[in-house]
Amino acid sequence: MTDFGGAVKQTEDYDIAIIGIPFDEKSCYLRGASKGPQAIRAASTGRAINPWTELGANLDEEIILTDLGDMDASGDFFDAFSRIEENVLKILEKNAVPVVLGGDHSISYPVVRAFARKFEPLDILHFDAHPDLYEEMRGDRYSHACPFARIMEEGLAQNLVQVGIRAATGQQRTKASEHGVRMIEMKDIKGSLSLEFSNPLYISFDMDALDPAFAPGVAHHEAGGLSTRQALDILHALDARIVGLDVVEVYPDRDKSGITAAAAVKIIKEVVGGIAILNRPRSEEES
Image (cartoon, rainbow, N blue to C red; front, side, top):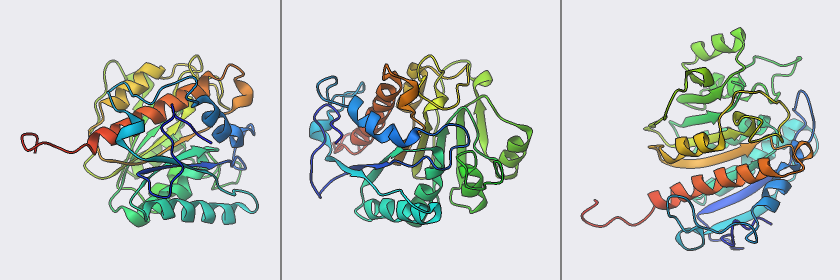
């Protein structure tokens, strides 16, 4: 089970719940992202890290963080997607924050379907090398290359902001324009990036948003990406109420060193810490 520096507690009364979705049936290139949840958990051990975040949150004391284990993602993918949606909704119905460990990026579609049942309107911040806005990929409308096309078509999010893009096609640019997607491409990121969201925010983090030098354990190596530091700086600067997170596309078989999973743990840790800080009791002077 996940450790996160000793912060994880086995309890039914929690603020944040980690859930693994070992699913990679919709990957259009390599299979192996189903091993992502296991790799992320292994990298989170308290033998290697502590529960404090960079901004000063102590995850062991300030929040109740639990790990619900991996859900059953086997069988027909429509059935699997339905189970994903219902499992995430159960967490949301407890007024807790789901942290989803993928899995390929196709899982974000059913996950966001659950969020849309709880939060309306909803904003999404999507880190990725690719827009994942294809109409279909090799005849498959539910490929990991297509989740945000389905999400925006169904009106599941009011605003979608994509960061780190560096492999957009003309078709995907057209799709983005049709649905008012803000695409922040790597070539246009020159300095710090401060993003503000007025609606509840869901973050979807594809590990190939990072340059392969920082995350070699992904299916698609797309050079010229974010450094881990850049990604953390963007997350730290966010002005938003974060209600959920997924971290997807970790392929441990392509990274025997484990630095991709370690980067995933760092991203999760800092996002969870940001939620803890936002939920701290405010003094009368602050309020």
